[in-house]
Image (cartoon, rainbow, N blue to C red):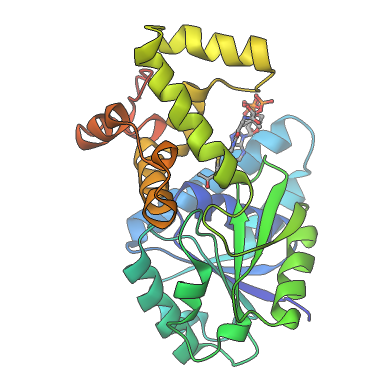
Length: 284
Ligand code: CAA
């Protein structure tokens, strides 16, 4: 299946990163956000990272300009109608995702593949909101999407081979290393990483260690590229809490439940990098 035009719905940190990958891979990309202001912020973010590549000599200026020209921002889902492939990266809540997929089902061509970047919700439940669950697949990228090599290609209960392999091939075209898995809570990586990060946060209180020392510990004692507090700040404390809650709801394993400390931070608006403060102060 040839993917010429891609729709990306939701242009937050993940969606903007995914849209960046799409335009860099030569696909005409149509981006949709809830407001034109947020959409423009995403375009600026993409332009910023592509310009950094130009400054570092890994991308030609003409390639950057051509990539940016492939991105079109639109005002409503109806403008995604002629997409061959749509990747959804909106808020991590089931109902809004199901509503969006029902709408995408109505407006896109029957052969279009509809992919969700959900990190912990059930792809099968999202697919069930459409009349074509065989064309729905999970495509789970990791944060930051332009830098992390992995994408999990998730087969929901009724995903057809065609759509599944099209998503795998598209992941490769985006320069990613795809892996195939089934639609189980947390798929592969988050099934392991979320309880692990939750344990790390609990250790903060149990061992009375500072976030700095915990991060130093995991970086220097376990070879992590960034410590757990830095990582949760990067992912977004709200995103991590949501994903933990979704996994806990499905598995009932206590380690999946978000630690109260993270929930309190979330309620206080300490969301990590994006809010300027989480475990660390980013001063912007
Ligand atoms: N988008 C695009 N480009 C980016 C970027 C972003 N968000 N962030 C950084 N870059 C670019 C920048 O241009 C940067 O260069 P400059 O600083 O010179 O501008 C360049 O990439 C390299 O950045 P770094 O120097 O920060 O790169 P690094 O070598 O330190 O590696 C890292 C950064 C890849 C993020 C590394 O620290 C790492 O692997 N961390 C672990 C991340 C991780 O585990 N992610 C998974 C989170 S879990 C998840 O995502 C699952 C979920 O469902 C929530």
